[in-house]
Amino acid sequence: MTSKITRIIALCLLASFCLPLELRAEDTASSLQARLKEIEAEIASDQQQIVAAQGKTRTYASAIAEIAKSRSIIQLQMEEADLQIRDAEDRRNETRKRIDENSAHRDVLRGQLANLLVAMDMADGQSPLFAFLKSDNVFDAMNVVQQYVEVADKLNEAVAAAKEINQALAAQNQALEDVADEARNLLAIHALQENALLENEQDQKGLLAQSKGKEWAYAADIKTQKSEAAKIRTRIYQLLDTGAVHITFGEAVTKARWVSGVTGIDPAFLLSVLTQESNLGANVGTCNRPQDPPAKGWKVVMKPTRDQEPFKSIMAALGRSTEGTPISCPMHDAKGNQIGWGGAMGPAQFIPSTWMGYSGKISAITGKASDPWNITDAFLAAALKLTHDGANGTTDGNWAAAMYYFSGSTNVAYRFYGDQVIARAKQYQKDIDSL
Image 1 (cartoon, rainbow, N blue to C red):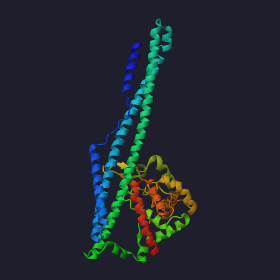
Image 2: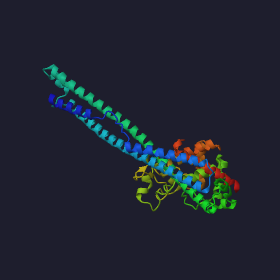
Image 3: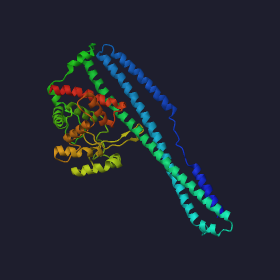
Image 4: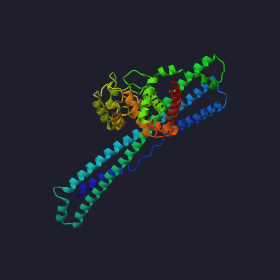
């Protein structure tokens, strides 16, 4: 019996020594760090050139050159974000692998502990206590019992250590997911920036063509570009996929003014936020459509623990099927790996769990079940959330509310979103004043 216990002790001690008792810190690849430094240097250089150019008389040609330089900055920033995403994903995958390995190790230790308890309870048909009482040599019997106790203590310590490491690794994994989410937001911001710059470039090229090669001052001629009220009123206001015909700017203003009377939101600011959401690109409303494959269905793209049950509740209340109703797709990195989750709904781009928090308030105002794809309900939802997050008609308050609408924070890494919302709101206000 003593030799049997000795073998168990040896195996258990070996197993516990193999336990990874410390988290290994992964050093970021030197090539990644080197490229990031290069990008930062290039961005700084381009920004200095833009500042220098702005100090000179701005012509159509110089404005186009400035936009081209700004585009190069955005492309560098997008590359930087992509590198950060790939690095975060690599480290997160390594952490998941180590969590799996540690869980398997912990299960082995638990099995050994169970086997030991059986051996302690009945070794060669006799319990350790019976062997102790029956033994002619008290010292041998005490030694056997002591060995049992030592092995049990060692295994308990090992299992506790494995659990502690698993908890630490899970926390690290969550931190890495947060890093990936931040990089995803950066990619969305940079996509918005590039779209804005492309639009500006087209505008400036048009102005340059109108100038017929004459180097007229850029600032002076911009003032002549104000649209007539009729054109502004009938301009198509591009919303997300609502399942209905796009509304005109005049109709959008009418809805925004009504919502303003209910919530106090600034109409131009509300329209600007909704426009910004529609400019987030191809991921908007391009999943779960009737023609989409199963890989783009709501059960795949929507976060299971957060949004799937609320989504089913929303659809049931509206008498609609969960299948075939357009929702946003998740974003993906350069390698095609999914970053975060999709599932945002309608013009206001609310995820189901967030919509549930405003659904009752909307219904109390409209007297019907709230519908994320109904334009009026979407306007109300956006206004309610923005006012909840501090939108108060001031530039600072509205800027912060827009930032919270996008990312749930005022992280300055995403400030382009808030800056662009405020800038567009000012232009919308001029258009509204012209109606």
